[in-house]
Length: 329
Image (cartoon, rainbow, N blue to C red; front, side, top):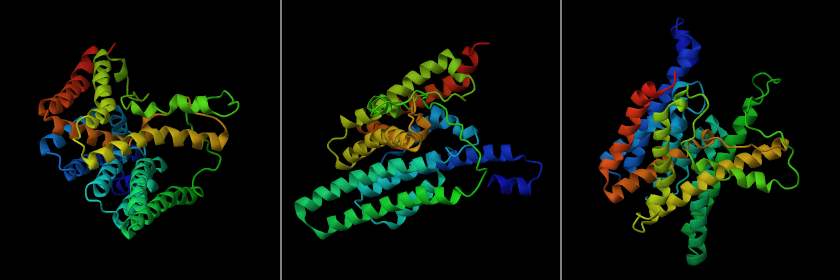
């Protein structure tokens, strides 16, 4: 898209066009997230309040102004929330529409498959239990549908990798940071367990956030954000009034958070025998909308619109005012 813009307007550089496209990705993601939350029968007040929180979450703030394939992460995450609604509320397991969403998402970035895989695992286990109990044909069809969508996600990840492997500079070495140079001796159990919970903290500060992490005010905002994002799943667990759809959402969200660092570390170890010291939350950017859905449902269940609006207002004030005033010279 950026190349098309520069072709039409030669005076507009590719870098500026690509940054503008990232902003458009985030706007599209916000719109999609709003309607995905509405699909969960969440009141408009809580949908708007939750969407208002998104621009001030570091994992979204950086991709919205950079040239990166993380930019569509919010839109993909909104798709995950909508597919979760289709599975857990409608109990509709038709393959066509989810498969298209999964395939397109996996073609953008392989790690976008993780939250979809978590949904499929939860639905697959649920269908398997139903089949064991009832022995009905519908449960068996659901299992086949889940397997089919899982295959589609693998086709998207590995198929696109095969296509892309013939392009670009073959001598290029990816500048991935954070890989430990210490050799792994024996089974990498310790290295694996050290990072398995790393994506539970979505308030991590990306290193390219332009010095905002030096501000006293921004540290305060991250503390609030950590409570919201880390606690959303657990808040909902105690407030879901035994609704099955919300319970399955909790299972899927927690499983997604565990799958991201787990599969990333396994892939890294199998590829070159090394382990990542820490798994960045950018790998789990498509999981954050699931967490935000838990947060919106928590607000609705507890009927706390003041809290819902108060958090993004504080974030807006700190990010645009306190950061500039309290940033060291």
